[in-house]
Length: 46
Image: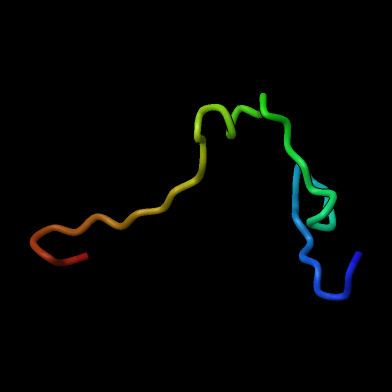
């Protein structure tokens, strides 16, 4: 692992970015699942 290499968190473990891999059959990869956040406003007021 190089001095500046990022750590990637996958399924509860940290991996150096050069070793971080996910399966092409991963549900999030196949279907684009994710977590999104939004704020609703009414007449410009949050």
